Image (cartoon, rainbow, N blue to C red; front, top):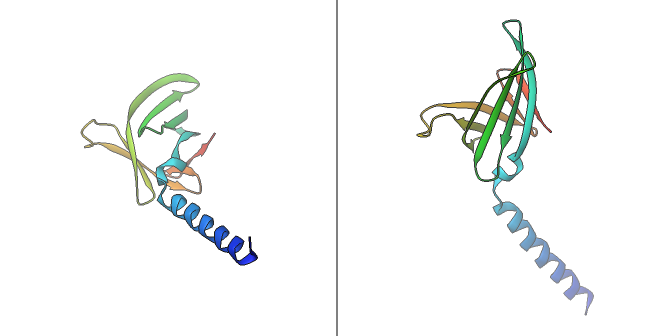
Length: 113
């Protein structure tokens, strides 16, 4: 095979791969478990948020080292913000900024585990 043909073949393959990468869902990089802790009203809270590939999430809270509450729902990414829908009809949600691979809310950072 001539050098020109090899280069052309390489460029075609690179183009095809870049198209697939550009068309992949941006939510895929969100999947995973994020965790962080903070103090509020002299109580220490630990939060774990798991974003699943099926568009659902689980958020678990510990208060002062003991289980406190948990919730399940679905989520979506809109303009760099992750909405965790608390209500089934999407009328109530919590919002997190997705910044550099972690979630942020009210100055609290939740890092990916």
